[in-house]
Image (cartoon, rainbow, N blue to C red; front, side, top):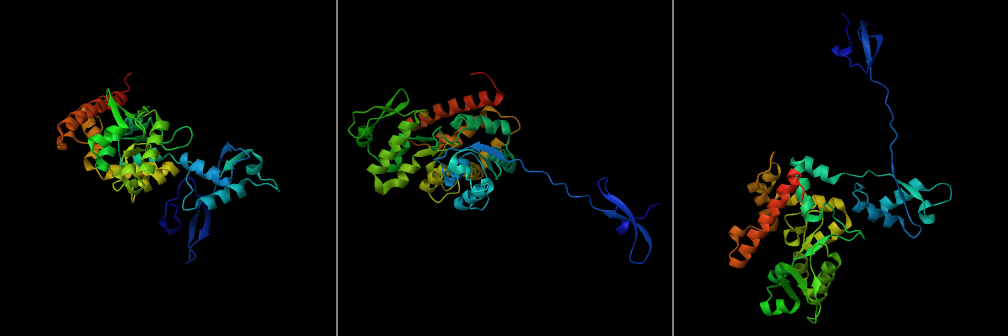
Length: 319
């Protein structure tokens, strides 16, 4: 019977050599296998000559790249050094460059960390922002909520009516002079941003109320949920979510963890209509605790539609 050094049984990958132990007794020595170096495959992107390395970092953060603890300036410097050959800088001349940083699947990461059902999470994020945290121009996806703005500002019906109008459950912004009529549906991102900027300019001392009235990013989390999402304020939430996809997913993970019942429903192995309705209520508001009869009715209808759509997407049924 063979005697191995330290009594350890070798693996198939380990090499064996003859030798002697400290007492001179013959033993079979075990050697670890040679380290195999696997070359890292870097993503390659095309840059324009008018882009700086900092511009590239800002864009990559929105696409999910992970720069660890590096500052934007440090990450930009590494990208430049990695791609610089001889005296030519491909970033300045405009060319294909390699990105020496990993691209992270942040959705998969929070699904794994939270232990939630991937199908339910995918369905939910599709409802919120079609699984996209940014618009084509790189701006943060938002929704300005007029009724929430009214409540946050403690605004009278008369003042609210000067600037906002509701027709067939669709909100419109009437402008400062009351003569415009900008449609405020989720696809109207330019109009949403115009109204948000108008409110910030008109009420400079109530910025928090404005940002509280905006839903943001991949999960369209309301600004008034900033604390539950791990941010110091709704303005900070807007700023950080505007800068990186990681912040959007991390914020949403924090929000889920702050709502035990929501987390439980997202972990369900087979989503039920009741669970779908509870998920809707966690996002839109619970009509059972709403005192205003009209708002209660609106929430019931809104959550019912949300739950039905969530079930449809979860089951993969046609629209």
